[in-house]
Image (cartoon, rainbow, N blue to C red; front, side):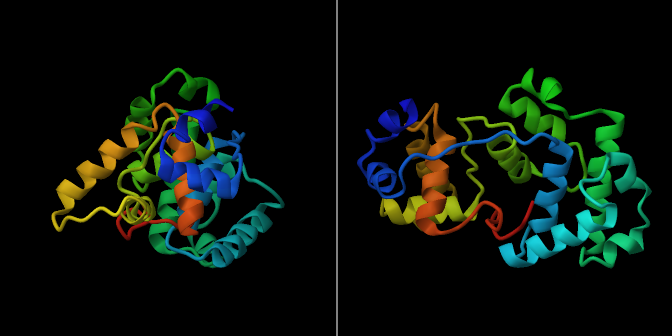
Length: 209
């Protein structure tokens, strides 16, 4: 695989690749649902997120349409364990899907930054959430979520970076990640695996969005 050959030029990453083997990215069919589930799971353990997702789908007898989500009473969604903010954010995503759309055909014509700019119009969807969608729903191979705390910690530890000023540290991390292009998504996946910090429960600087 091309990405393995490219990333293996980095001796630190090569160790992780040898440890975990080949990885795969898969596209997700319904992007609005991916965003909804991502919002639901933020700042929760994988176990709790799975329980809430099941309660959500049980409300509808499967994956709901955007219209069904919008039409669901606020308190009904609160009752499955979602916060007020998350209920609002999920319904915002559903309304955006109805009004503007976010299917594969529409987003495939956009660059990564254009997708981020487009989807972060939705209140409750930030850059980090959109970067996760680019990676794990759109299967974009060259995404690095610089604000992801798990990735920051992994790079700092793996490359033994030392600096007290955050801005300088982030610049160093960014420079290191540039050498992994055009396969920064795969590099990120190896770093998360190494840190045992799944993107599902990873946080943007301690926050979900």
